Structures are given as C-alpha cells and as structure tokens.
Length: 251
Image (spheres, rainbow, N blue to C red):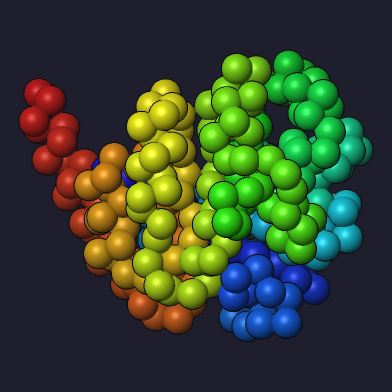
C-alpha cells in the first residue's frame, strides 16, 4: 500500500491551503495545527508533512514554535519544510522535533551546503523537494522558476546519496484536479530506487488508489482532507485491509 502522509501548511500559525502556490488564494482551515495533527494521529496515521509557508516566503524558518507544538503533543513522524536556508535553520527544525526536513530552494541555490547536510545528518533525514512548473524546478515559495530541469536535478542528488524525493506539480497543487501520475511514473521509470512522494492535485481516495496502482511509493495530500473530499476513516480502513492482503500473499 502506498504510504499515506497528510499535510499541514502554516501561515501566521494557522492551518491553511493555497491554490497553485498563490498566497493570495489562501483558505484557513484551523487556528490550531497541533489539534489537526492530533486528529490525524487518532485516526492511525504515522507520518505528517508540515510546511512553513511564512518561512518559504521569508527565506528563513518562521513557525518553528508551531512545529514544536505538534511534535510535543503527538508521536507522529514529522517532516518539515519551508525556509530552511542555513545551518541554523536546519538545526532549529530538528531541535523543534522534526525527524526529517525537506529542502528545495537551497538545493538549487547552494547545492554544496545540501551535500554537507546529507553527509552530516544522513540521507534518511533529508528529503529533496522538487517543486515543478513547466518542467523546471521552482524556488522561494514557488515565486520563481529556476533553470534546473527536473530529471538532471534529481540525478545530481541521487548521485550524492538522496533517496527521498517529494515532487509537487505546482499546476496541480490545491486544485483537486487529480495528481500528475504521468510525471511521477516518468521519474520512477528513470530512478526506480527512489522513495518518491507524490504531491499535488489529490482529490479523492480513487486518486490515491491510482497512484498506488502506478507504483508510486508515497503521497502527500491536504486540501482534499480539509474540503471533505476524502473520508480519512475509510482511507485508513482500506489501507489496513490492503496491507493485510499483501502480508498474506507474501506469507
């Protein structure tokens, strides 16, 4: 079964979602991200993806106190991204309880620093964020497109030891228009060793099942939860049943 990772995006300490990364298209869903995280844990989820959107825009971590409130009140394995640009930022994220960090813009702008972090913290604690628009890697809270093409960008980091990649198709993000399955399949075809985390466009359990059928290892999803498009209890039950079937098949 595909790994299921609910998402919490944070602006001004609130749980929000954007559409296509546009800060002017913001919807607030909760004033307490920690309570939202507790709800995910109570349903049986083990992982959580947290994005500091203020940090992504400001180019340094802003909402580390919110991250700490989540990690101190749940036992979820939290990966955290947004605004990680310096040694101080990455230490701050880990000190606030993140088990993994997602690095995106800095991986484009200062690859040598990211290579240092890979060596220092280990590839199991670093997720490469590959946010894609028109085939190019986007940076700085999706406000700019770099000159980096997706596949060569990934190869550079795979060669350096990266195994976890979070790929967001920006044109799909927050739209509930369905995930970019063909994009993720092309990545897996090129780099089958990756633990690829799909992100963007998920609108239903059927979308998640389609990603699973396509062989994508993991998926992050958020807006479909908050808009009531996905029944999380049904999703957890389906995942448990499928895991049991797979276990029996292996046995």
